Length: 189
Image 1 (cartoon, rainbow, N blue to C red):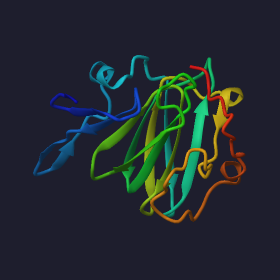
Image 2 (tube, rainbow, N blue to C red):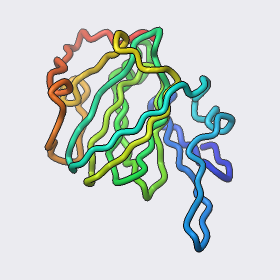
Image 3 (cartoon, helix red, strand yellow):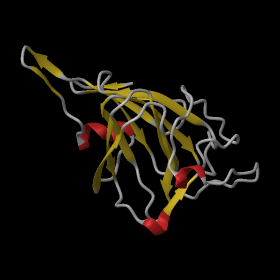
Image 4 (cartoon, helix red, strand yellow):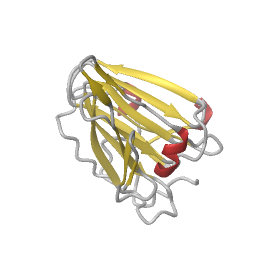
């Protein structure tokens, strides 16, 4: 675990995937927190500069978004933070040469626990809302490229993700991602 006055960085069982807890400074007025610091996030595996910042809003509890990634040469590292509400955030290791290939890791991100997930290249990402009115902010090391977009099904038994709630909503696109077989070869990073 790497610590500073602003961040606590914890490595997960999946190589390169980390959970960062922001350490807000509080007083009677409220708080101030740093969402990202290039120098300090080097300890979490972020070695490339941020090229794009996105925000999502999901209204209802139980909704699932994901599991998305981008292929080379547009593979990206992401930092995902929940700034309103709470989500169960998941990353799946799709790196074909990884010792943790096909394994997933999930963590609660919320506006109250100040955690974010740092997701390296070669991982699929998605989440389930565990409250209503969830807002997420995503920092990306690569800009979105529709031709490089990839996805796997959030319900695929090959990965066996245990979602904490009954799934109440998914986009048609996410529902139509096919299941993989045991011959799934992963992605190149």
